[in-house]
Length: 330
Ligand SMILES: Nc1ncnc2c1ncn2[C@@H]1O[C@H](COP(=O)(O)OP(=O)(O)OP(=O)(O)O)[C@@H](O)[C@H]1O
Ligand SMILES: [Mg+2]
Image 1 (tube, rainbow, N blue to C red):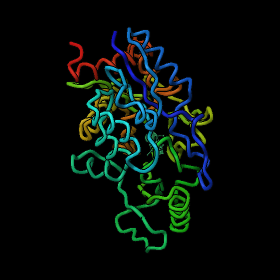
Image 2 (cartoon, rainbow, N blue to C red):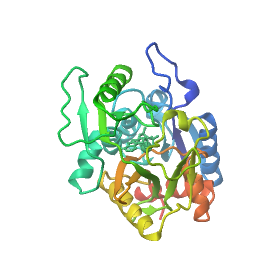
Image 3 (cartoon, rainbow, N blue to C red):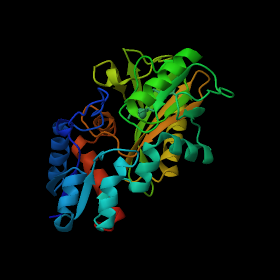
Image 4 (cartoon, rainbow, N blue to C red):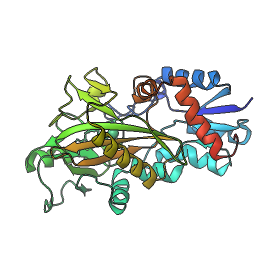
C-alpha cells in the first residue's frame, strides 16, 4: 500500500505576533479540512502519514518514509512561503502533489503572475504598484473605481469594504493601510464592475476544467460594485452557485481563459482561477491559486457533485494525477 504524507498549516497552530493584522492566519486550514483530506486519501486505498508544517518536514526529511506528499502547506513568511515545502521535497527527491516551488512563487506574487498573463495575452485588470506611500501617484492610464490589495496575499487578506476606492483621497488612504499593515507593496487594479466566477481545474495532459462556479454575495449574482472581503468569507454572505447562471457561450469563454491561465503558470494536478466579467461581457483573470482551499465549504465538493463525484473521489483524482506524473501508477 502506498504511503501518502500530508503537509499543512493549521489555523490553531498560528501564534499571533504583535502588529499582526486580524486576518493574519486566514490562509491556514481548519483541523477538520486536514481530517477530511486524510479520510478521503485513506478511502481511496492509501495509508496517510501526517507530517505537518515546513518545520516538521525539515526535521523528518531524511526519514520521511512516504511514496508521495499531498501538500497544502502555506509556509512561513514572505512571497516565497508557499514554495518552501515543495522546495524541500524537490531537494530530497520526494514526489509531491500540486504545483512546484516556481509556480507557487510566481502566483502568490500577484504582480509577477499578471506580467505572465499579459505576456500570454490573457486579459487581466489594468494595474500599477505602490511601494512607498509617500511617492507621488501617477494615474495616467487608470480609471476609478479601483481596488487596492496586498501584492502577495491570499484568502482575501487585506480586503475590507474600504478596498474599493472612488477618488485619490480614498486611494491614498487604502495604499497607506496596505503598506502599513501588511508590510508589502500595494497592488492597485481597475475595479471590474460586473459578475464573478471561479473555475476549478484538475489534472494534466490535458487538464480537466470543472463546471464554472458563480459567486453570490448578499444573495445577489449581479455583483456590480460588490466584491468579496475577508469579512464575507468568515460569514455566510458569500455563496457559490454551480451551475453558474450564464449561457453556454460565456461558460465556454470563461473555461478557456481559466485553462489558459492554468497553463501559462504551469499549474499541476489542481488549481482554481478567479475571473470577473465587466458590463460589456469582457472577462478578466483576477488571479490563479495553484494551492486552492480544499475545505468542504469551498468549491471543490460543489463542482465534484455537479459532475457526479464525491469529495473523496475528487481528492483521489488530484492524487492520482500526481502519481501518474511521476509514473508511480499507470
Ligand atoms: N480588479 C478587481 N475588480 C473587482 N473585484 C476585484 C478585483 N480584484 C479583486 N476583487 C475582489 O476581491 C476578491 C479577492 O481578490 P483576489 O482574488 O485577488 O484576492 P485573494 O485574497 O487572493 O483571494 P482568495 O480569497 O480567492 O484567495 C475577488 O474575489 C473579487 O471579489
Ligand atoms: Mg481570489
